[in-house]
Length: 177
Ligand code: NI
Image: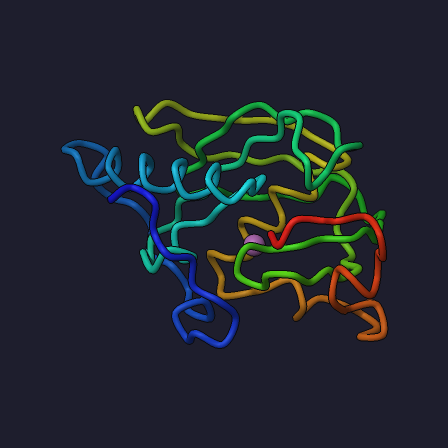
């Protein structure tokens, strides 16, 4: 049963701080990642954090190819990030629209750092260390927020910029996340 139900906003498990992964061996992490990728792709998501499927571990995945939800988005390589650490490299903040599989059918205008460094581990235990900007930086911040119990609506500065896809973007037929 690789495709797992995605928890929705209101479920207290989405508000908890996730625990670091300590065991990279054995099948537990591998099985979790299989389920996460199957779930994310089935729902056309660009990213997913383990707490969204009810697993309180510091694991996120993301991948932006050509995605019908973000037709203009730059591509982001398929990435698994375990125990990530984010370091902003600028004080510059941009606002842009985000959705979330845990907040289906909605969008909000969310402030994010425009440039950052992220470090973490790949599933084989090797180090990942990247400096990114733009949409890639936005996706990483969104996904890693899930590990600290933060959902994007909690970051919206003006809640007038939060609403249903059909009302905010009529006629665009955005997917239901
Ligand atoms: Ni999300």
